[in-house]
Image (tube, rainbow, N blue to C red; front, top):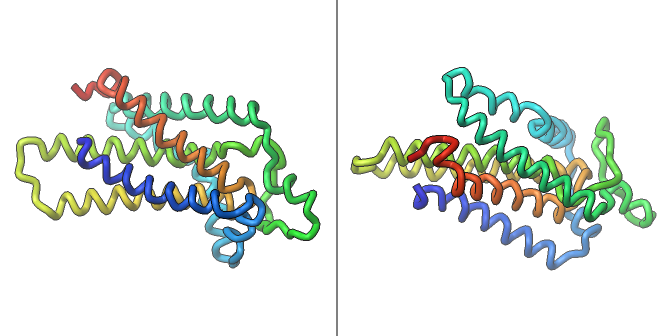
Length: 221
């Protein structure tokens, strides 16, 4: 299983490397403007609604396994989401960093990009809870996808096509999660640093829980 899941991890680490490079190269406010340099009506609509996936649709999707009496899958996601949620809230109240709307108030020479109809928050910016939720859900999907693929291919000579499809699916999952994180920047709800740490939490928590308790919760062994 590990040899398949590493595709997801490597793809995420490549994205994370680019993000860390940007964070080290640009000041926070300038970087936020750079990442919001091109707004279009269709992007405003897309990212506004895409961001809301982390608010309730993911929780509904996580309940679908119950329809096939796979309650352990929903339990695993709930455990991951609860752990990451607590971690995010502790860090938010520990650092109490301002969001873009508040941070840009002291810089009248800079105009904060906004999307019409989006209510901007001003406090507890770090880290991004929406981003953590995106990556928790996507990482859980990647873990379960690679596990069931491994189980299906056990004892068989796996052809190249299924492995390529799995690799493509895992890379696509990283892209979908990254889009969720970027939506928080595009909507000026968070800075890139908030999204970066939120993604790390969202990847680390499911991986750690899968390693330590996955076999007990999901009866993988």
